[in-house]
Length: 305
Image (cartoon, rainbow, N blue to C red; front, side):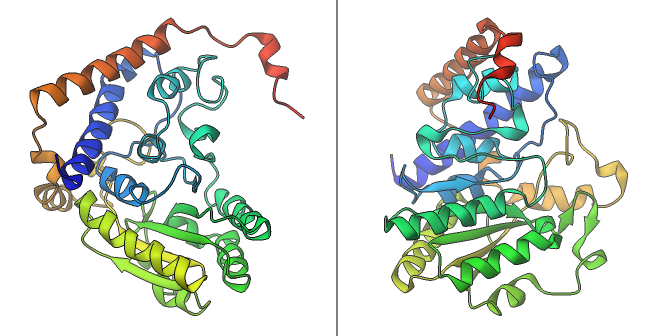
């Protein structure tokens, strides 16, 4: 199997995982709010394809795809969504606060733009320690409205930190378009900070994104400057939840259908063996979560300083 096919299989697996989340969500096994990555799996797989385990990823509350693409444990993932003590955050975080330090998936937050300064701090620490670890910080274009976004990219550029800011640009902050909230161009603005800036419009294929990111990472490492990447994005589901929201009026079903037509995951058919393996792994993880205990009252006092 080629690397390209492996990446597509991984993206397809992530979609299947989230489709099963949709299936079981009405059962109340998962009581956490959900921000699904369906439609954006290729971005996560492509971005993570060239990262080492030591490289650190910080992302948003729409984090399922990145958690899995970075190598997060699927059993602990489902247990966390179900609020169980065997979850990756011992059941205290839920969908919006995933973290797995064993693969350097450094955590997510429900607060827009809040992981940006954490990522910059990690990159600064890496530089001071003199190690070769790269930090990748993913945010949406909505995060660029926040003051901390501007402070973070400024600090990273000023100190030439080993970090790449990845903007998943769907043109929206929930339901509000960029035209309604921004008087600047994202890429032009980033370039004024002397960040290495890159842009990719064709983001349907994880293979295309992986090849693009390989060049970005090489240039960031070679030039020893912070990088900034804009990746065109389109989410298939509503901002939060498991349904559709085309009736709201801020975007059309025609946009969705045009994007879906070019989506290789939509037409991808895994082998019978791969399909069986993926389904088994998912169902096993769901059962692991169901069979895991809830945290106790005493657990409230653990990991609190």
